[in-house]
Amino acid sequence: MVAKPQSPNYLLASLPVADFGLLRPHLKTEELIGETVLFEAGDSVDRVYFPHTAIVSLVVNLSTGEMIEAAMVGRDGIVNGLAALGQPISLCRAVVQMGGASSVLDLDRLRQIVEQSSAIRTALVRYAQFLLSQTQQSAACNAAHSVEARLSRWLLRAHDLNGSHTQQFTQEFLAEMLGVRRTSVSLVASTLQQAGLIKYRRGLIQITDLEGLQAASCECHEAVRFSYERLLGEPTVRS
Image (cartoon, rainbow, N blue to C red):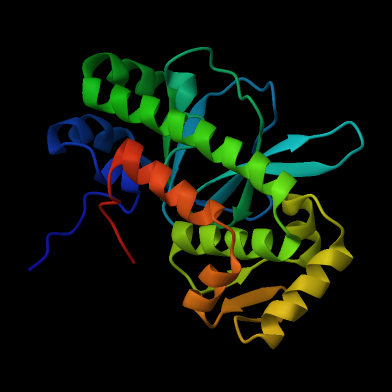
C-alpha cells in the first residue's frame, strides 16, 4: 500500500517528516474564493498560503489599468514564502485564479520555524528561485510566442496545478492574464476547440486531448516543469 502523503501541497509533502512536524500544528485549512485578492503589491504580509486545489496568480498592474500575470502558484508551492526570509512585503498582487483549499500559516510562526529548520529554509529559497525562473519564462513567452501557444501553455500549467481537466475561467479573465484582447482569446479558444483539444462553454474549459494541447503549446510549459524539478525535485504528489 502506498503511504498517504503528509500534505496535498508538493512543497509541504517534500519536507522531512520531522521538519513538517514543526509546521503541522500551526497549519489551518481554508477555502479560498475565486477572484479574491490576497495581497496587493506593497502590502504587509501577515500570512502565507500553501495551496492544495486553489490556484493563485501573481500579477503586475500597469498604469493603464491592465493586469498581466507573471507567475502561477498552486499545489506546487507557497504564496509569499519569501517574506519569511526577508522584508514581509508583497512584491506583486496575488489574486485567487481558481477557488479551492489551501493550508494557511501565520508569517510570524513560519519565521520562527525557519530559524529551527534548515530544510524548510532551503525549500523556501529554492521555491523563490523557481518563481523567478517562471517569471522570466513568462516574460519571454509573452514576447515571442503566439496567443494560441500561450493559451495552450497556460491551460497546461493550470492542469498541473490542480490536476483537473476542467477549468473555470471567463474569456475576460484569460485575456487579462495573457495580456491580450478578449477577441483574441475567443478566436484562439475556438480554434483549439475545432481541433478537438478543448471544449469551451459558459466559462468552463475542458481539456479533451492533453497530448494534443501539449503539442500546440510552446516550449515554455516544459521549461517551467523542468525548472521546478531541477530546483525542488520530482513532485511527491501526483494526480
